[in-house]
Image (cartoon, rainbow, N blue to C red):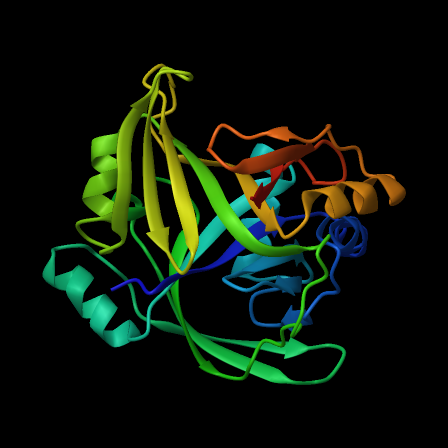
Length: 279
């Protein structure tokens, strides 16, 4: 049903400021600067080997603008949603309805690149709370247009999303949705003594949805927490970030064997951000 983690959404107040900061963090240029007139939003997209990052702001009036404003009002700037890709929206919608979920109509969207006037189109489907557990989460099927991508990423730039971290207080409930309904592969389910927490790894399109169960969380809903980005050379990335005035911790060995990591401490618009090199 789900073919990939399509993209990550960051809600921001000042799109130009956020673009400047993330160009410094990521080390690449945006692939798209777009406008969604019917939604009342504008975006800047950075495209990677396995997914893309969308900086999204309100621009005008519409359901999209309302969602961005509400997210920022409630949580401040930062991670606002994840989008899952399906290759056949009609089939996905029918499957959910057959399982007894009340899903709405499949909608159509259009984005225009303000720099090139290129057009991209897609179908999307909002999901009920039983499936989102109050995450901003929806399904998308791209139908027309191409999102440009750099052919080569410099060693010190970010080239791939390693994983996105989600907090939950119900790991079994999460498995029921992401494995049993969305058909995403559960690659790991274990207790991490270091954190005294249960951890789940769902893998798709060479990235991971990492889920941390925290039973003491008072909020019954799941929440997006942070991002880990892969680089070819963390040494080069560290030097580049420091030269741009980005605050970053020293490089150290990661908890996972054969990894080096560093944490970005500024310019992230409230997103906990880790760099990782697989050695």
